[in-house]
Each structure stands twice: as structure tokens, then as C-alpha cells.
Amino acid sequence: FAAISEKQLTRGTEVQRAPALAPEIAARAVVDIMSQKGTDLIAAVPSSGGGGCVKRILMELKQVASGAASVWMHSGEGIHIFPAPDNVKFWRALIEGPQGTPFEGGVFALSVVLPDSYPFNPPKVTFQTLVYHCNVSDAGSICLEILKDRWNPALTVPKCLEAIRMMLKDPNTDDALRQWIAELTLAHEKSNGADTRYYDKAREATQRDASTSVAEWKQTQWGC
Image 1 (spheres, rainbow, N blue to C red):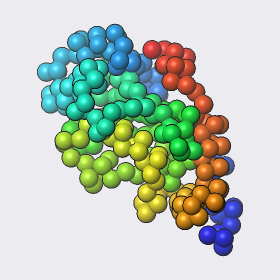
Image 2 (cartoon, one colour):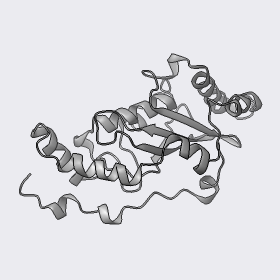
Image 3 (spheres, rainbow, N blue to C red):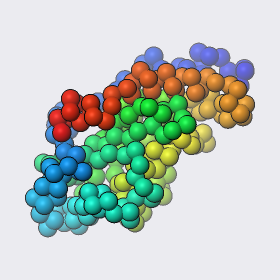
């Protein structure tokens, strides 16, 4: 990778922008599913009003709120879910950066939009916080197989969020959205960590862009 210039490897970082949400989505209020407001939301939404889609979404939210293990692949550690009270097909989520990665200590905000055809089609999950990762585009799009070709109705949104958190720890350089970051990631892996360019850049980006805590997101950003 020595033949690849630093300019080539870092191109695009200067024009990164936080992905914009449609105004009606950006302004949408959310509630913490683990709070009393979350419990009230689940009780207030009629499961019959939106067909099988809403019924399935409410089931997943109930499982998260009750601590049911079946809604997760593992434990759900480091993941926080915030549905919108006026439309349960829209969620916000926070993912804590995994330990032992350059994302450790960071908190990353995502939007989740569930189609009317859910669970037969996958949710659209987008990073709202900038993240220096080869499987995430400048606009926050995520390249993850279970959100595309390997989706199946047995999966849940919480499982998808877990998979995204695991992706932060284990990048897939064969399916990169930003190839220059994939090259740095491979250089880091093949050098057993001696080539620190990827780690340093990802760590710097995390400290710069993902320093808002979970409590700050809830209280000052989302008012919940």
C-alpha cells in the first residue's frame, strides 16, 4: 500500500457532510423505549391500525422494553432505541462504539425507517453521525448484507443494529463504499497494527464527530 498516496487514501474526507434528513423526519420527536413514555407509546398505538407491519414493529418494541433476549442476536449491549410516538415506523438509535476499536468512547446516531412491507423487506438504516469506516458512505449509507440481499423476515431491527455495531469492529473490506478507507484498514490488518493510519484517522474522527454522550443526545438533542 506504500504506492498509494496519502491524498488518494484520504480523498473525500474534506467534503464529508452529515446526511440530511427530510425536514418532517428531522423534526420528529422520539421517546426512549426503556422509559415510561416508551411503555405508554406501546400501549397507545393500536396494533390493528397499520396491518402486519405495525403489529410486528410493536412486538419488537415490546420485546426490547421487556428485555426479551429473542429480539437480539446477543445482548443488545451498547444499543439504545427511540421510536417516534406519532409514527412507529420511524426510529432513532444510538450505538456506542465497541471496546478495542477506534470507535470506543464514541456514540453514533442512526435513523431507521421501516417500509409498509416490513418485515418482508428490510428497514432503511442510515448513520446520522459521521463515521470513518469503509462500509459507510459519506452520506451515512450502510453496506451490510442483512440490510440487502440476506434480509429475511425472521430478522428484527434490533438484530440489524447489533450487526451494524459488530460491523464497526469487523469491517468488510471486500464490500467497501469508500475504497480508500478499505485500503487503510487492510494495511492496518496486514501489518498487525503497525500501520496505524486507519486507526489514527478513525479515532480522530470519532473524537471529533461522535463525542455527544447518550445522556446528551436524549436530553439536549431529542428532548426525551
